[in-house]
Structure formats: structure tokens, C-alpha cells
Amino acid sequence: MSDLRVIDLRSDTVTRPTPAMRRAMAEAEVGDDVYGEDPTVRRLEERVAEMLGKEASLFLPSGTMGNTIGIKLHTRHGEEVVCDHRAHILDWEMSMTAWFSGCLARPVPTEDGVLRWSDIEPVIRPRTGFPAPTAMVNIEHPHNMGGGTLYPIEGIEAICDRAHERGLKVHMDGARLFNAVAASGETAARIVARTDTVMFCLSKGLGAPVGSMLAGDAATMAEARLYRKRLGGGMRQAGILAAAGLVALEDSPGHLPEDHANAKLMAERIGLDPAKIQTNIVIFDIARTGLAPAEFLARLKSCGVLAGAVGGSRIRLVTHYDVSREDCLRAAGAIASLLEIRPPA
Image (cartoon, rainbow, N blue to C red; front, side, top):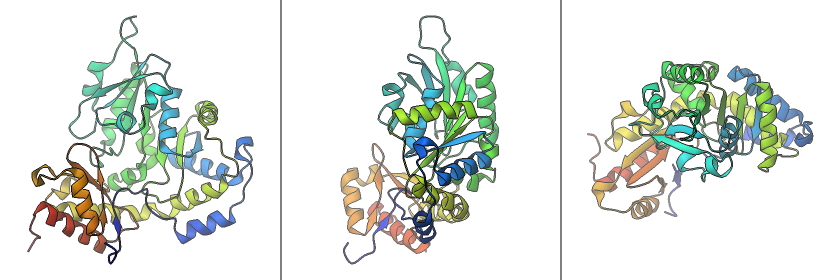
């Protein structure tokens, strides 16, 4: 592998900050954000609230913290959170729903990670003194382990409307929200309009080195600021980080369609239906190779390609702006060889 440039497809979190981000970070005007005095953080929070059509937003170190706070805002200990059975909050966030919020996740099986109201309604638990009552619904859009799948806008609106009718809150885990924007043609504000809170990552897809955003109404975000402090997320001269986020919001969304096209290209080259790839995530199964995931990944690494295992015999690839079309073609060739798929004529 030493003679090859490593193609890192483990995640879109592996990107390096662009020269424009580095300049902005070096020149950022800063203050103490715990005192609310960092002007660059304030600009970022105001810009995000404007883009999402929400009253306020909050800058956070990570998406896990954003989802943790989002759930805490809408629940009390002993309640349930409805999510799909492969939700990020369930499988990849160290059980923070239970640990911090004291809530039980109610996973609902889905084929592609996309919940419908018809899936949710039967599992809603009433406040009768016997079951743990349902407090909120979590929507993951795009859905990571579903392979970057998207909710139809009508589905999001139906879930929010019906949930609110039942007195339930809705939080959107929109870690890759702007991939959803690029793929669907809907604005971010339209996508999240009826949600109570939404989180998205500046470090996934958009390429900022650190940070995520949580947005909602002003009173809810004031409460969220307290939970951020409790979780150790109160940062001081955080404008150095927020400056890169501002650049990412302006410069990066325009590159996301290229990432999506590269994902479709790779899917086709390794024998998947490219029409099913909606954003920048490709998940495929290696069971037929007879190799354990660790062995498959080791052989792929020897070809100069890094990927990730995501449970069972499934492997995940994530495209981003640090991998070119040529990189993706080379990676797909290495994968196809391990899968013993002949390249197209």
C-alpha cells in the first residue's frame, strides 16, 4: 500500500479543512462563547437559524451531543422515543438516550431506514400507568445505515403533523442534512419546517473539521445551552472552529452532487443498482465471499482503499470531496476484484 495514495472511504468525516477554511480559522474574530461573547459563533448560529427557518440555533462539538440534547429537550425519564431499528441514536451513540435522558428507545423495523406514520402509530404508548409513555419520534434524514436513504417530504410532514396531534415532539437527526437538500431539491428550511428540533453536522459532507448545529425555537435553544454545558460542550474561543463552519455552509453544498454521482458510479461498478443510491453512502454485503469483514477490509487496505464494517457482513463506503472520480473508480475496481465481479465491457 505504501506505493499507492490511500483512498479513504470510511466516512465523510475524514476530510481535511480546505485552504479557505484554514484562512478563516486563522483570521477569526473570537471571544468567550460560554459568556456568549464570541462574535463568529454568534454569526454561525444566526446564519444556521436563517437557513433552517428556525428562531435560533446552537453550535456544538458533535452530532452525538446534538441528538442527545434534542432528545433530552423533549422527554422526561421513563418515557419512550420511537425510532427505526437501525437508527444512529440507537446503535452508534453509546446509549445516550438511556444514559442521559433516562428514556427507552422503541425501535420500529423498516426496510430502508425510512419510517412511515403507519409504522409509528401502532407503537405509540399511552399514559395509562402501565407502559412507558411515548414522548417523541426521531427521524433520521438521510438515513445512515439505510444507505443514505431519504424520506419523501410528504412523509416528514405527515409524521410531524400526526405526532403533534398526539402531543408528541419530533426531532430530526439530519447529520447529513445538506446531502438531503442536494439530492431532493428541497430547501433545508422546507425539510425541517415542521420538526421541533433538528441537528446537522458541519463535519459530515460539508467538510468542516469540527462541529454540529442544533436548531429550534428560541426558548428551546436557551434550554439546550444549559444541557450543552452539562455535557461539557461549553467552549471558550470557539470562533476559530465556527469560522470553518461558516465557510463550509457557503462553499461545500455545491460539491455534494458530485459526491452523490461518485457513489452511484461505485455502486454500479460493484454490482449494485445505482438507482437505489440517493446520497453519498454505499452499503454492500460480502457474505458470498466467505471472508470475515476484518479480512475483507485488510485485503482492501492492501490495495490502498479504506472502508468500514457496519455490522454483520455489511461494508460501507462514503464519498466526499477528498476523493475524486478517478479515486472512486480505482476503489471500485479493487472491491469488484475481491467480490469477483467482472468490470463492465
